[in-house]
Image (cartoon, rainbow, N blue to C red):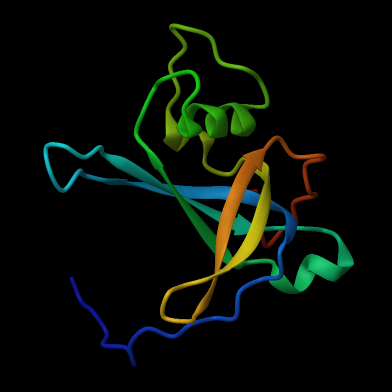
Length: 141
């Protein structure tokens, strides 16, 4: 494996608070740090919105961390339902890898950290209003 050393963390300006169509592009399991804690899943989304005023943000990636839980009321299950476009029932099995490339609607806000930086926070993830048209240069097409 080869790595290239970068200048360090560079903060992008956050996208304005709004609703954005986005594609699910990946996930990472974050193991619990203590026995009293829970595993988490970091879900990654890429803005892909056709509305002219939002196209400038296409390609921007946003992440949401949720508890790794199969409880029907959990955030992870609700997000899976949004990605699938249907409700899940007891006994259903979901493979997150199989959902990569699907679209959702993100409710994004801007939050100020204790250090004074402005960052994006995904408040909620719901079923999309429509599925954006995919172009030929789209790697998921």
